[in-house]
Length: 363
Image 1: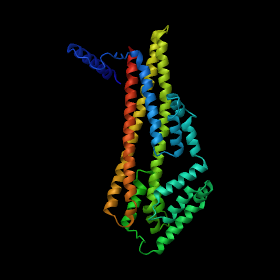
Image 2: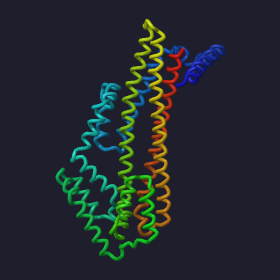
Image 3: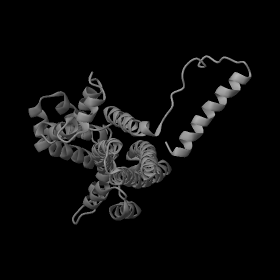
């Protein structure tokens, strides 16, 4: 909260109290002492605000579409009876978040994630064999999932392709304009994995079947990887930012405490000012980073909005396979854009609070 906003709130409470007394009124809160926020309270208020956002961040992860290892671990931290201490430990280096990320790297977890992604991106209409095989693997054992990843997926893909080629009614011709569109995606799509999938569909020696499969599931699979990658990247970055924020606030608060009993007050005041300046600079850098992420999510949402529109206008042929995934991706990226805006607002508030403390130390 900026100093101006804090002063305004105090003045408003005072005016309400005085006007109530003049009118002989006795509001329900009149007998309750109004807490006075002094400059000495500011460090604890900043720390409390940071702790609250840390808890909110962990809650968002628990409710998110991040991998199950992260979500389950986040819920465990939130349910701990140790409150903010458990949250801080979960975010700390080597804590619950890092442990969850390490579990994600196991072969067992990677195989399960692959099977889940295949189910979510391969429709029963276009890829019935692949979809059924992936669902069986998910319901099976770790060995079943490993087999599906190693050989089962490719074998089911070939069965689906053979069935499509043998069925003249469902064989899909690829027009030159559709190849040109895929070529544009390969060069300019905002998602790296979509670009890779499009490039593979147009690789040397590719056929119409490869382009049809791009529309059928390759596009969706690439988009899913882009979204997953974005979510993990911003989660990693924000966990690191909160770790740093906690340390910087602790250092600034300690410096301000030392000022009270310092023999050399000028030196101690300068150190406290610098400590709060470091908090402000960190918060401002985080705010700018989230604004950039907001732009990234906005570009993706707009791209998928255009794709969904094009798919609706070309409901037949190849485009029908991407219509529903396009709308779902548009919604997902729009939500990420909103989340990024909210995170930028938090860091702006942290910047304002830290800058107020820096000015206060300057005297």
